Amino acid sequence: MVKSLSVRTLAVAFSLIAGGCAVGPDFHSPTTAIPIAATFARNETRLSQSTDGPHLPRVDVRDMGFWHQFGDDQLSALVQQALNGNHDLHAAYARLQAADAILNETKLDRFPTVTANGTATQQKLSTDQLSTGQPRSARIYDIATEASWELDLYGRIKRTIEAQQAQQQVTQADLAALQIVIAAEVADTYTQLRGTQLRRQIALSHVQNQRDTAQLVAHRLRAGMGTELDDSRAQAQLQSTLARLPALQAQIAVLQHRLAVLLGESPEHLIARLDAVQPLPHLPPALDPGTPAALLRRRPDIAAAEARLHAATARIGIATADLFPRLSLGGLLGSVSLSGHDLFSANTATHSVFLGVDWSFLDIGRVRARIAASEADAAEAMAHYQQTVLGALEETENALVRLNRNRDELRMLQTAVQQRDRAQFLAQRMYQSGTLGLFEVLDAQREQLTAQDTAAESQINAVRASITLYKAMSGRWDQPADSSRYAQK
Image 1 (cartoon, rainbow, N blue to C red):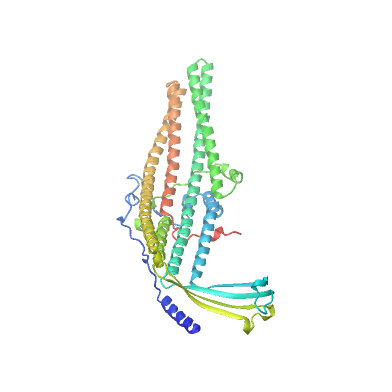
Image 2: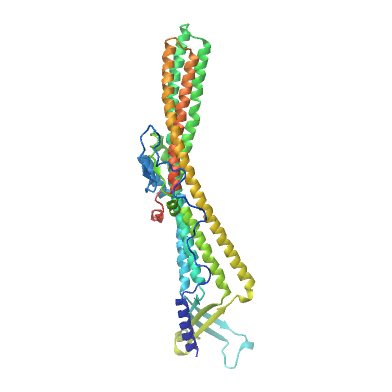
């Protein structure tokens, strides 16, 4: 009778499970309620950068390895080193490994759980416990294998696996997003470093020019052709320019230390490589950001937000499954004997089969409260998804407008530098010929330094703006993150 019952039960279970019944809503990729334009509002790459200048070639920002666009081999090497050695990336990969392991464990819930145990007991009964002819002392040997299996009639296990798969996708997308952040931060920090070195060199060149001017003024004073006021002015301007150097040098050191952390190494191993002055990375040509729709498909943070919504939707099904009975099959096969030699003999064999039912219908209020909470979590995840989409569009539009305006600013400032250089040259010649006073010379030198330094800052900002745009567009980081590089060796 027990055997026939178990066979019928298994037949029914297999037929229900094969039907794939799962309560709760099925997930579908969300459609944003936000109207998505065909092009970015601030995309000006279709237009000439200036009416009197050549049109810059367009580069698709989806190119893999955006840092190669800057024409700096050392930058490319540093980014690759950071992608291999950054400890935040190692931690993110560890989280991905943990998510993979949890997913594998969750998938095993579809199959029976099998356990085995054995005991050997030495017992001594009191005289009051003894039955007629029963020995007071005895040894009992017990060994058994037990199996239990939850029948996933309403998809609780299926939805649990679905939720964990989505959570694993969240972790993978977070790793991809962190890769982009690390690569962009290395490029940005390196650009600031080279830019600060450029500003320091500009200041040093003016120190030398102003020192020459101060010596000329001192020589004229000794020859009776100058005044102490001129000498004081020349010395004061020289010291003011010298005062720029300590802060620039400190900033160089700070940026080197930051790069060391990003690369996952101590600063002393990096300083020697970066102390040698190198040019600022080249400003890439005009960048083509593609379309907003392509952006939404490519950004890993949007993929992560969608996966979080998927997980939250699946958890509604997990909670809803508690409205229905949870059935489980189980069985035990073992042997109990007073002698170890008799284990597994026919007379000591023991077995059992059971069908369990767990139903929370008496606690329906709590179950419906959990369902309501899961639905609220899904609504929150949907709102977060919509906000992530808006944030991605905002970040890209901001990066586009900043890059375009930085290019305009840089072009104007470079023209201003040319004019300041010429003004300083003419003022120096006129001072030496006696047709211009020292005050005008010092003023021309000061304005020349300011113009060159401001143009250098603008050049730095333009390169950084292009890095920000690459970061916003996520390069071609839409494919799964390459996690093998973080594996422990």
